[in-house]
Amino acid sequence: ANKTDVTIVLKKKDAQSLRQYLMDLMEASGEESIKERKADAEQMQYDVEASLGDMIVHGLFSINLFSLLVLLGCAVGMAEVVSDTLGQGFAGKSIMGILASILVMATVFMSALWDIIKGFVKYYDFKVKRIEDRLYIRYGFLKKVNYTIPVDKINALKLTQSLLGRMSHRYMAEIVNVGMGDDEAEKQSFLLLYSKKEVLDAKLHSLLPEFEEAVRTPVSRQPKGTLAAWMMPLLAYCAAVAGVAGTLAELLPRYRGWIGAGMAGLIALAIFLMALRYATAGFAVGKECVILANGYFRRCLSYVSYEKIQHVQLEQNFIAKRMGIQKGSLYLLASADSRVQGIPYFPKKEVDIIKSNMIS
Image (cartoon, rainbow, N blue to C red; front, side, top):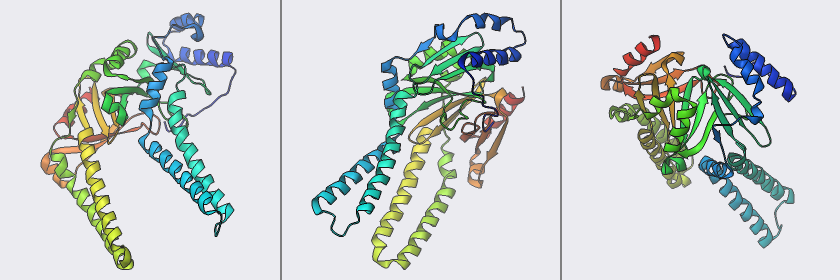
Protein backbone atom coordinates (compact mmCIF):
# COMPACT_ATOMS: atom_id res chain seq x y z
CA ALA A 1 0.00 0.00 0.00
CA ASN A 2 3.00 2.33 -0.34
CA LYS A 3 2.06 3.45 -3.84
CA THR A 4 -0.59 3.08 -6.54
CA ASP A 5 0.02 -0.12 -8.49
CA VAL A 6 -1.32 1.11 -11.84
CA THR A 7 -1.71 4.59 -13.33
CA ILE A 8 -3.68 4.94 -16.58
CA VAL A 9 -4.16 8.16 -18.56
CA LEU A 10 -7.52 8.26 -20.38
CA LYS A 11 -9.94 10.72 -21.89
CA LYS A 12 -12.59 11.91 -19.42
CA LYS A 13 -15.43 9.85 -20.92
CA ASP A 14 -13.32 6.69 -21.00
CA ALA A 15 -12.04 7.31 -17.48
CA GLN A 16 -15.61 7.63 -16.15
CA SER A 17 -16.61 4.42 -17.91
CA LEU A 18 -13.61 2.56 -16.46
CA ARG A 19 -14.33 3.90 -12.98
CA GLN A 20 -17.96 2.75 -13.19
CA TYR A 21 -16.90 -0.68 -14.49
CA LEU A 22 -14.49 -1.13 -11.58
CA MET A 23 -17.13 0.00 -9.08
CA ASP A 24 -19.56 -2.51 -10.61
CA LEU A 25 -17.04 -5.30 -10.01
CA MET A 26 -16.78 -4.24 -6.37
CA GLU A 27 -20.57 -4.38 -5.92
CA ALA A 28 -22.38 -7.60 -5.04
CA SER A 29 -25.00 -6.49 -7.57
CA GLY A 30 -24.71 -3.97 -10.40
CA GLU A 31 -28.33 -2.71 -10.09
CA GLU A 32 -27.47 0.33 -7.96
CA SER A 33 -24.64 1.42 -10.24
CA ILE A 34 -26.98 1.56 -13.26
CA LYS A 35 -28.75 4.49 -11.62
CA GLU A 36 -25.44 6.23 -11.04
CA ARG A 37 -24.52 6.04 -14.72
CA LYS A 38 -27.52 8.23 -15.52
CA ALA A 39 -26.46 10.91 -13.04
CA ASP A 40 -23.44 12.73 -14.44
CA ALA A 41 -21.05 13.77 -11.70
CA GLU A 42 -20.82 17.24 -13.26
CA GLN A 43 -24.54 17.84 -12.52
CA MET A 44 -24.57 16.28 -9.07
CA GLN A 45 -25.96 18.30 -6.17
CA TYR A 46 -23.17 18.13 -3.61
CA ASP A 47 -23.62 18.04 0.17
CA VAL A 48 -20.62 20.33 0.77
CA GLU A 49 -19.35 23.01 -1.62
CA ALA A 50 -16.52 25.37 -0.70
CA SER A 51 -16.90 29.08 -1.41
CA LEU A 52 -14.06 31.49 -2.10
CA GLY A 53 -14.21 32.59 1.53
CA ASP A 54 -13.94 28.96 2.70
CA MET A 55 -10.80 28.46 0.59
CA ILE A 56 -9.20 31.65 1.93
CA VAL A 57 -9.92 30.58 5.52
CA HIS A 58 -8.50 27.12 4.81
CA GLY A 59 -5.38 28.64 3.26
CA LEU A 60 -4.78 30.85 6.31
CA PHE A 61 -5.12 27.98 8.76
CA SER A 62 -2.97 25.68 6.59
CA ILE A 63 0.07 27.97 6.67
CA ASN A 64 3.13 26.05 7.83
CA LEU A 65 4.98 27.95 10.57
CA PHE A 66 8.35 26.63 9.39
CA SER A 67 7.69 27.74 5.79
CA LEU A 68 6.70 31.19 7.05
CA LEU A 69 9.93 31.51 9.04
CA VAL A 70 11.98 30.36 6.02
CA LEU A 71 10.15 32.90 3.84
CA LEU A 72 10.90 35.75 6.22
CA GLY A 73 14.52 34.63 6.65
CA CYS A 74 15.13 34.52 2.88
CA ALA A 75 13.48 37.92 2.39
CA VAL A 76 15.69 39.48 5.09
CA GLY A 77 18.79 37.73 3.69
CA MET A 78 18.21 38.90 0.11
CA ALA A 79 17.47 42.44 1.29
CA GLU A 80 20.71 42.49 3.28
CA VAL A 81 22.81 41.21 0.36
CA VAL A 82 21.31 43.75 -2.06
CA SER A 83 21.63 46.61 0.46
CA ASP A 84 25.24 45.71 1.28
CA THR A 85 26.14 45.47 -2.42
CA LEU A 86 24.51 48.80 -3.30
CA GLY A 87 26.06 50.52 -0.28
CA GLN A 88 29.64 49.23 -0.63
CA GLY A 89 29.80 48.29 -4.29
CA PHE A 90 31.50 45.18 -5.67
CA ALA A 91 34.91 45.86 -4.10
CA GLY A 92 36.50 42.55 -3.16
CA LYS A 93 33.38 40.62 -4.12
CA SER A 94 32.65 38.28 -6.97
CA ILE A 95 29.63 39.20 -9.07
CA MET A 96 28.98 35.51 -9.73
CA GLY A 97 29.22 34.80 -6.00
CA ILE A 98 26.66 37.49 -5.20
CA LEU A 99 24.31 36.28 -7.95
CA ALA A 100 24.71 32.67 -6.78
CA SER A 101 23.80 33.67 -3.20
CA ILE A 102 20.73 35.57 -4.40
CA LEU A 103 19.70 32.66 -6.65
CA VAL A 104 19.93 30.12 -3.81
CA MET A 105 17.93 32.34 -1.46
CA ALA A 106 15.39 33.09 -4.21
CA THR A 107 14.93 29.35 -4.88
CA VAL A 108 14.34 28.61 -1.20
CA PHE A 109 12.08 31.68 -0.98
CA MET A 110 9.90 30.55 -3.90
CA SER A 111 9.67 27.01 -2.51
CA ALA A 112 8.49 28.31 0.87
CA LEU A 113 6.14 30.79 -0.83
CA TRP A 114 4.54 28.04 -2.91
CA ASP A 115 4.13 25.87 0.19
CA ILE A 116 2.05 28.71 1.67
CA ILE A 117 0.13 29.65 -1.51
CA LYS A 118 -0.92 26.10 -2.40
CA GLY A 119 -3.11 25.96 0.72
CA PHE A 120 -5.24 28.71 -0.87
CA VAL A 121 -5.56 27.22 -4.37
CA LYS A 122 -5.11 23.45 -4.07
CA TYR A 123 -8.72 22.77 -3.09
CA TYR A 124 -10.32 25.18 -5.54
CA ASP A 125 -13.94 24.26 -6.35
CA PHE A 126 -13.94 21.69 -3.53
CA LYS A 127 -17.10 19.56 -3.40
CA VAL A 128 -18.08 16.33 -1.65
CA LYS A 129 -21.25 14.23 -1.59
CA ARG A 130 -22.40 10.99 0.05
CA ILE A 131 -24.64 8.71 -2.06
CA GLU A 132 -25.60 5.53 -0.23
CA ASP A 133 -22.29 3.81 0.56
CA ARG A 134 -19.97 6.02 -1.51
CA LEU A 135 -18.27 9.40 -1.18
CA TYR A 136 -17.72 11.57 -4.27
CA ILE A 137 -14.94 14.16 -3.84
CA ARG A 138 -13.71 16.65 -6.42
CA TYR A 139 -11.43 19.68 -6.32
CA GLY A 140 -8.55 21.31 -8.16
CA PHE A 141 -7.49 24.39 -10.08
CA LEU A 142 -4.45 23.44 -12.16
CA LYS A 143 -4.95 19.74 -11.50
CA LYS A 144 -8.52 18.40 -11.39
CA VAL A 145 -9.05 15.56 -8.92
CA ASN A 146 -12.12 13.29 -8.71
CA TYR A 147 -12.43 10.48 -6.17
CA THR A 148 -15.14 7.84 -5.79
CA ILE A 149 -14.62 6.14 -2.42
CA PRO A 150 -16.60 3.20 -1.02
CA VAL A 151 -17.21 4.03 2.65
CA ASP A 152 -16.35 0.50 3.77
CA LYS A 153 -12.83 1.01 2.34
CA ILE A 154 -12.15 3.91 4.71
CA ASN A 155 -9.78 2.66 7.40
CA ALA A 156 -9.62 5.76 9.60
CA LEU A 157 -10.71 9.37 9.96
CA LYS A 158 -8.22 12.12 10.86
CA LEU A 159 -9.01 15.57 12.26
CA THR A 160 -6.02 17.91 12.05
CA GLN A 161 -5.35 21.30 13.65
CA SER A 162 -2.50 23.61 12.74
CA LEU A 163 -1.11 25.84 15.50
CA LEU A 164 -3.45 28.64 14.40
CA GLY A 165 -6.27 26.08 14.16
CA ARG A 166 -5.69 25.01 17.77
CA MET A 167 -5.83 28.62 18.90
CA SER A 168 -9.17 29.19 17.13
CA HIS A 169 -10.68 25.67 17.59
CA ARG A 170 -10.79 24.87 13.88
CA TYR A 171 -10.25 21.47 12.27
CA MET A 172 -9.83 19.94 8.84
CA ALA A 173 -10.78 16.33 8.10
CA GLU A 174 -8.95 13.63 6.13
CA ILE A 175 -9.74 10.00 5.44
CA VAL A 176 -7.24 7.14 5.47
CA ASN A 177 -7.53 4.36 2.90
CA VAL A 178 -5.53 2.60 0.22
CA GLY A 179 -4.91 4.65 -2.93
CA MET A 180 -5.48 8.24 -1.77
CA GLY A 181 -2.30 10.01 -0.70
CA ASP A 182 -0.01 7.81 -2.80
CA ASP A 183 0.89 10.57 -5.24
CA GLU A 184 3.92 12.60 -4.13
CA ALA A 185 1.92 15.78 -4.78
CA GLU A 186 -1.17 14.44 -2.95
CA LYS A 187 0.08 13.70 0.55
CA GLN A 188 -3.33 14.30 2.11
CA SER A 189 -6.39 12.05 1.68
CA PHE A 190 -8.66 15.05 1.90
CA LEU A 191 -12.28 15.26 3.08
CA LEU A 192 -13.21 18.67 4.59
CA LEU A 193 -11.67 22.15 4.73
CA TYR A 194 -10.81 23.95 7.96
CA SER A 195 -13.95 24.96 9.89
CA LYS A 196 -15.26 25.39 13.42
CA LYS A 197 -15.86 22.18 15.37
CA GLU A 198 -19.65 22.48 15.35
CA VAL A 199 -19.69 23.10 11.58
CA LEU A 200 -17.35 20.18 10.96
CA ASP A 201 -19.51 17.90 13.16
CA ALA A 202 -22.61 18.79 11.12
CA LYS A 203 -20.82 17.99 7.86
CA LEU A 204 -19.48 14.69 9.20
CA HIS A 205 -23.02 13.78 10.29
CA SER A 206 -24.17 13.83 6.65
CA LEU A 207 -20.98 12.44 5.09
CA LEU A 208 -19.61 9.89 7.58
CA PRO A 209 -22.16 9.08 10.31
CA GLU A 210 -20.14 5.88 10.92
CA PHE A 211 -17.57 8.00 12.80
CA GLU A 212 -20.03 10.38 14.47
CA GLU A 213 -20.01 8.66 17.87
CA ALA A 214 -16.21 8.32 17.84
CA VAL A 215 -15.71 12.03 17.13
CA ARG A 216 -17.82 12.87 20.19
CA THR A 217 -15.72 10.63 22.46
CA PRO A 218 -13.53 12.77 24.78
CA VAL A 219 -9.78 12.22 24.52
CA SER A 220 -7.78 11.76 27.74
CA ARG A 221 -4.35 13.25 28.23
CA GLN A 222 -1.43 10.86 28.72
CA PRO A 223 -0.99 9.52 32.28
CA LYS A 224 1.29 11.46 34.63
CA GLY A 225 3.68 8.50 34.64
CA THR A 226 4.55 9.49 31.07
CA LEU A 227 6.81 12.26 32.35
CA ALA A 228 8.75 9.75 34.43
CA ALA A 229 9.03 7.36 31.46
CA TRP A 230 10.46 10.18 29.36
CA MET A 231 13.28 10.80 31.85
CA MET A 232 15.46 7.99 30.42
CA PRO A 233 15.56 9.25 26.81
CA LEU A 234 15.84 12.84 28.05
CA LEU A 235 18.87 12.04 30.21
CA ALA A 236 20.48 10.10 27.35
CA TYR A 237 19.90 13.08 25.03
CA CYS A 238 21.36 15.52 27.57
CA ALA A 239 24.42 13.31 28.04
CA ALA A 240 24.98 13.12 24.27
CA VAL A 241 24.62 16.89 23.85
CA ALA A 242 26.98 17.55 26.80
CA GLY A 243 29.53 15.10 25.39
CA VAL A 244 29.55 16.75 21.97
CA ALA A 245 29.67 20.22 23.54
CA GLY A 246 32.58 19.21 25.79
CA THR A 247 34.54 17.84 22.85
CA LEU A 248 33.97 21.00 20.80
CA ALA A 249 34.94 23.17 23.76
CA GLU A 250 38.29 21.35 24.01
CA LEU A 251 38.91 21.69 20.28
CA LEU A 252 37.70 25.29 20.03
CA PRO A 253 38.40 26.96 23.39
CA ARG A 254 37.77 30.44 21.93
CA TYR A 255 34.11 29.58 21.44
CA ARG A 256 33.39 27.91 24.78
CA GLY A 257 30.81 30.56 25.65
CA TRP A 258 28.88 30.05 22.41
CA ILE A 259 29.17 26.26 22.71
CA GLY A 260 27.82 26.35 26.26
CA ALA A 261 24.92 28.57 25.16
CA GLY A 262 24.17 26.20 22.27
CA MET A 263 24.17 23.20 24.61
CA ALA A 264 21.79 24.93 27.01
CA GLY A 265 19.55 25.94 24.11
CA LEU A 266 19.33 22.38 22.74
CA ILE A 267 18.47 20.96 26.17
CA ALA A 268 15.87 23.70 26.76
CA LEU A 269 14.37 22.98 23.33
CA ALA A 270 14.06 19.27 24.15
CA ILE A 271 12.27 20.05 27.43
CA PHE A 272 10.00 22.54 25.66
CA LEU A 273 9.07 19.98 22.99
CA MET A 274 8.46 17.39 25.70
CA ALA A 275 6.04 19.78 27.42
CA LEU A 276 4.27 20.45 24.09
CA ARG A 277 4.00 16.71 23.45
CA TYR A 278 2.50 16.09 26.87
CA ALA A 279 -0.05 18.89 26.37
CA THR A 280 -0.99 17.65 22.88
CA ALA A 281 -0.93 13.85 22.82
CA GLY A 282 -3.70 11.67 24.23
CA PHE A 283 -5.90 8.62 23.65
CA ALA A 284 -9.36 7.14 24.13
CA VAL A 285 -10.81 3.67 23.71
CA GLY A 286 -14.29 3.95 22.18
CA LYS A 287 -16.91 1.33 21.34
CA GLU A 288 -16.08 1.20 17.62
CA CYS A 289 -12.75 3.03 17.37
CA VAL A 290 -9.53 3.74 19.17
CA ILE A 291 -8.77 7.48 19.19
CA LEU A 292 -5.16 8.69 19.06
CA ALA A 293 -4.00 12.29 19.50
CA ASN A 294 -0.47 13.20 18.39
CA GLY A 295 1.59 16.27 17.63
CA TYR A 296 3.59 19.13 19.09
CA PHE A 297 2.54 22.53 17.71
CA ARG A 298 -0.12 21.01 15.46
CA ARG A 299 -2.50 18.29 16.65
CA CYS A 300 -3.82 15.28 14.76
CA LEU A 301 -6.71 13.15 16.04
CA SER A 302 -6.96 9.71 14.40
CA TYR A 303 -10.14 7.65 14.70
CA VAL A 304 -9.29 4.06 13.75
CA SER A 305 -11.93 1.32 13.51
CA TYR A 306 -10.86 -1.83 15.35
CA GLU A 307 -11.71 -4.05 12.38
CA LYS A 308 -9.36 -2.03 10.15
CA ILE A 309 -6.27 -2.46 12.36
CA GLN A 310 -3.71 -4.81 10.81
CA HIS A 311 -1.57 -5.18 13.90
CA VAL A 312 -0.37 -3.28 16.96
CA GLN A 313 3.20 -2.98 18.24
CA LEU A 314 3.65 -1.95 21.89
CA GLU A 315 6.76 -1.12 23.91
CA GLN A 316 7.80 0.19 27.33
CA ASN A 317 11.04 0.93 29.17
CA PHE A 318 11.51 -0.26 32.75
CA ILE A 319 10.14 3.01 34.19
CA ALA A 320 7.00 2.77 32.02
CA LYS A 321 6.64 -0.88 33.08
CA ARG A 322 6.81 0.19 36.72
CA MET A 323 4.19 2.86 36.02
CA GLY A 324 1.91 0.41 34.21
CA ILE A 325 1.86 2.35 30.94
CA GLN A 326 2.72 1.53 27.31
CA LYS A 327 3.19 3.25 23.97
CA GLY A 328 3.56 1.89 20.45
CA SER A 329 2.40 1.93 16.86
CA LEU A 330 -0.79 0.91 15.10
CA TYR A 331 -0.59 -0.35 11.50
CA LEU A 332 -3.22 0.16 8.77
CA LEU A 333 -3.65 -0.55 5.08
CA ALA A 334 -3.00 2.94 3.73
CA SER A 335 -0.52 5.13 1.88
CA ALA A 336 3.02 5.24 3.25
CA ASP A 337 2.44 8.48 5.19
CA SER A 338 -0.64 7.13 7.01
CA ARG A 339 0.22 3.44 7.35
CA VAL A 340 1.71 3.80 10.85
CA GLN A 341 -0.20 5.67 13.55
CA GLY A 342 1.67 6.51 16.75
CA ILE A 343 0.09 5.43 20.05
CA PRO A 344 0.98 7.77 22.95
CA TYR A 345 1.53 6.35 26.43
CA PHE A 346 -1.69 4.89 27.88
CA PRO A 347 -2.55 2.56 30.80
CA LYS A 348 -1.61 -1.07 30.18
CA LYS A 349 -5.10 -2.23 31.21
CA GLU A 350 -6.52 -0.60 28.06
CA VAL A 351 -4.55 -3.08 25.89
CA ASP A 352 -6.94 -5.91 26.67
CA ILE A 353 -9.91 -3.80 25.53
CA ILE A 354 -8.18 -3.02 22.20
CA LYS A 355 -7.23 -6.67 21.68
CA SER A 356 -10.74 -7.97 22.36
CA ASN A 357 -12.31 -5.36 20.05
CA MET A 358 -9.85 -6.22 17.25
CA ILE A 359 -10.81 -9.92 17.22
CA SER A 360 -14.52 -9.61 18.04
